[in-house]
Length: 174
Image (cartoon, rainbow, N blue to C red; front, side, top):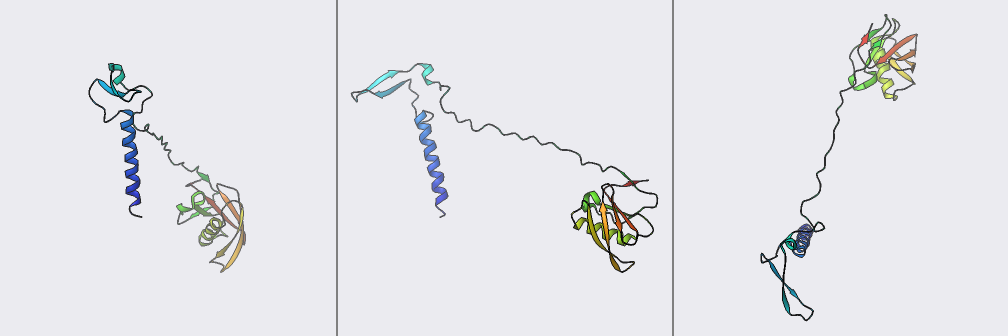
């Protein structure tokens, strides 16, 4: 099997060389006359003019394929539109950049703790985003709650014991 690639290469090069000889690109004489066979089989001399030595427009050339160009357009990453949060909202840390459009999480009222807010954020991402009902654990209450999440920028999740969670992409403004 190791001999197959060299064999293919040799066959290719042999065919390429034969094509060059056939087109007169190599192997021709520098003499301005050529010997041809007549119908009787006897060689005869025919004179060639200088224009006969120039390649015709239809003859093969060895220029190679045309150059390939590629256009690359770079765009700056989109800056998230700042989100206006209610006055009582508090951003919870850490900011989870890997969550993209819901990288930030904020507790929307005093009935909501930051640990619960971050658990809602994680459940929302795990559910695939968009309008979803998620189940999240509240460490403060030591139980799980169902939260209905709707909207975008911010996504607002409501449920549990009057809990409000806000999920959004960029730094909030007040």
